[in-house]
Length: 281
Length: 253
Image (cartoon, rainbow over all chains, first blue to last red; front, side):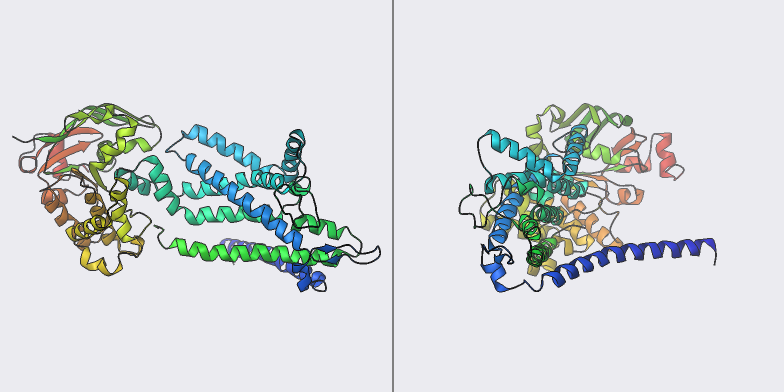
């Protein structure tokens, strides 16, 4: 064997090993969650709110409040962040801003992306206290929106940057304005990437505990207004896991959280395929 | 007396500090086919894209001088008027870029943004323009299919149909046949010859033979400068400039 074939083999082994590590972790995580949570998985998990039990017993009831809470927090937050994100990302393109400015904004977004979510939580908490509000659904949504904006914006931005300049030229030469080009042509072409960005943001938002810990608070009831505090799946998992005899229920909750993320991913994949058919290669 | 649709006076274009077009003075006659020829990298495309102010969407570009379209300097026009300037000039690029929508919507798009809302009128224009470029019989059963499914040659003809749908005065073509197979290229050439009855056609090409076949008027660019321009028969049969002679005989390329 000469040096080049050995090189070839080493790299192949490295690549296969990397893939195995990633896929392996996925399988182990799912396995762990299912094995530990299967005993607590039942219909009442998703149809009941928690029921207080005397000390010495495992926590009773289900986690319906957290499922509803998670959806009520993450879906509006992702919607808001997507609206803001698509605005910023279309505006960041050369058609509107000189590259010196847009690259500065990109850098700032990247820094925001790196800020730990607990900082967002504390930031919103301070503002919340300052204006005299208490932990509630609405403050939680705001914290999550702030957390998701840089993620969604940068993903959209990258996919919009990939739109070939020839396509923009084609649109402009038909007499389109910048706005028409951005919204009717570029946005269509970049749509699969835009959707991927939204998904990534949703995934981050629905799974984050630190930012909603103080802002959304915790409650055993389903929130009835945006000013009620609410539980979410991540905070519920944390709560259950730190309750004596609650670990199994915590794993069951984790399993439900994974399922929600999985369903959302699959649905959006199907949705992307529908929109992909017009994309120009 | 020939009337000129586009004229440039002392046109200089700088791109990233490169002096791409140097003091270009040209005249493009109306309702004729003008070919811009010259070796690659001599500024042909830059010249073409300056006519509808398409250069400006790129970064770091500086334009000096005058570009007169129908006697008016388009470089003086405000940014808000640029879409109107561009509407007057259809563009056919090197690689066809259909819009990411259906075949029908590719043509309807231009009509809609310029204020046509009548559905019947849109359908009629879509049909007429597709017939004009000889695409109607090939696509009439699948107007709602994606334009990206068409062959490259069909896409290029769709782009031409899309351009003429908004009734421009000029059709700018940037090597429109270079990405196509010989048959599709021939179709485009034939179309351009037909179009020059109603439109002023400017064709950038790097193949001399194509220019010989189709052009009425020639502009020869070399290193960003206009070496020679004039009616095609004079240009090919009695070139004045030694560089033109050298280019025509294949000594420089």
